[in-house]
Amino acid sequence: MGLDPGSVLVSTAGCVLNRAGPFEILEVLGEGSFGTVCVARVINDPLKRRVALKILKGAYITNKKILNRTRDEARLLSRINHPNIVRVEKLMEVNARPIVVMEHVQGVSLDQILYRYRDGLPPAIALEMARQTCIALHVAYQEALGEDGRPMRVIHRDIKPSNVLASIHGEIKVVDFGIAKGEFEGREAQTESVVMGSRPYMAPERLDGLNDSPSVDVYSVGMSLYELLTGRTMNLSINPVNHEAALNRQLSYIQVAGMSPSALEDLRDLIRRMCAYTRDYRPSAIECARELEQLLFAIEPRYRIGLEEFCRTTVLPIYESRQARMPTGDEAAPAGESSEDNAIAEVTGAFARPAPVAPQGARWLPLAGFVGLLALLVGGLGVAAVLKFVRDADGEGEVKLWVPQGAKGRVGDILVPGPGTYALPEGPTTLGVTLADGRQLQCRFDAYDGTAVRFVSDHEISVDDGGAIPCTTPNP
View (cartoon, rainbow, N blue to C red):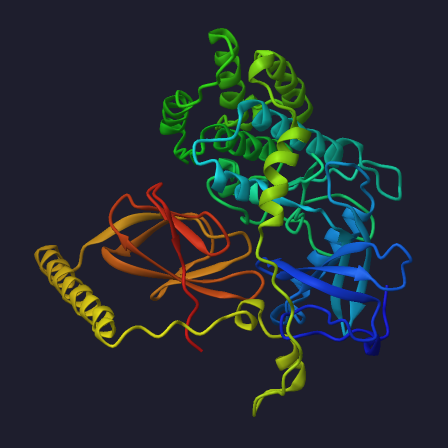
């Protein structure tokens, strides 16, 4: 699993440089929360194969939990061989930094395609993409076997358009199993029901800390399919009373040319069941795949387009028009920083460009806007102060708080050890949270009697079923 540290160097972009190592870096594909993905060519391969390298960011090389999760993802995917799941070739380590060597998919994510199709993809394409995604999830949970010969029971837990790729050759690939849950030998990370994922693709039970099941992925595929068909992001309530009404209302936006009214209602009903609030009502991934295949053939032939043709005519131009980002070389370490710290600079910082200089007359515009915003803010604070004055200064409200599993919270002197109802002073409130991995967050909201606050990701909250509100990191 190891590699001579001297054979690979790491650039300021977070990627391995093409200096006397086994790879020649061609481009930086992008970065996620924990890692950077680069395209590389294998130097000693006569065919000069291209691979993708997923490299953990420098900020996490001492985070045991993230290290274990990265290694687990590589071990897990190396045991799955299916055309709809990105293939992992091996895991290497350089100076204790995991580097996952993966199949390079020439393609783009579904959210990139949606950017070109604001009103939704051709229905036949959307159904086929969802069908192949469901097959991948079925294989990961039911058919992928560990070394002991038993199913690994892999649950992805973060299915969304950005984690599904369409290749230029007409293949659908599910990627990023970074927070997947599985049962396999050699697992390092503790399997737990962490509230990580992306709203609105996250199933309601994930927010309530229930044990994850394959149905959480089915829910996410249903939400993604709706987006692929309509270009809209479906907003569903985490309140069971309002969930079904919101679902039925938004399903009316689905329209499919060349599909009979009865077949269209079958399609809406399938998504209704996939996105059901109660997980027991959702079909399995393989049942969804079968129904989607039937619905594909319910579209008149003249309205159908094959996935290969679509990828050749649409995905290929998008892929070829991408802005390739090249890694930069090492730079001298600034005073006070070690060379190791400098060598593992963030990708975003490495590619930051200086802002263009505004014309002299235009330089006052941001200042004028800032002054106006400041005046508005002061006015708003004045109104808030008046409202607070007229309220009872000693007033308290019963506030429902859900904190992530394993996390500890505090509001002032009030400890929040877990989900529950707490008596908090009414008004602007800050919930301080220390996550299981040691990160600290400050989440601000207005506390009133009956307010419900939930974490909808590892760094966002939702107040009274509203939109996601980012939490902040305390200043050191």
